[in-house]
Length: 63
Image 1 (cartoon, rainbow, N blue to C red):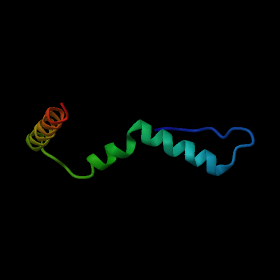
Image 2 (image 1 turned 60 degrees about the vertical axis):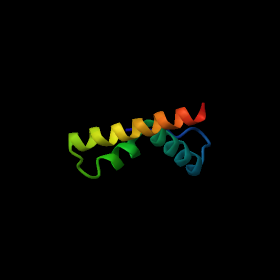
Image 3 (image 1 turned 45 degrees about the horizontal axis):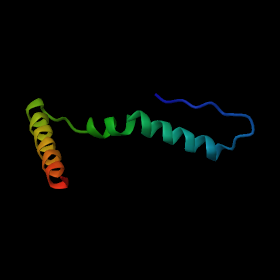
Image 4 (image 1 turned 135 degrees about the vertical axis):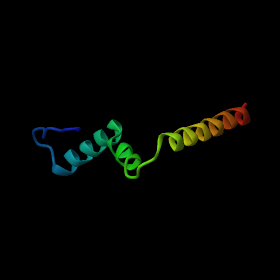
């Protein structure tokens, strides 16, 4: 869990902004969104395979 410490003469708005940045960088929100619904391992493999194919196709298109 990301934590931030209040610096001297720092407003709460700036503190909140730093905290939000740390949360985004740590990947906590994306993990929570992924675990919101159960996905079986076979389904997960199928989705990952589909994503890899799309990435490969995009790279081929860019070149």
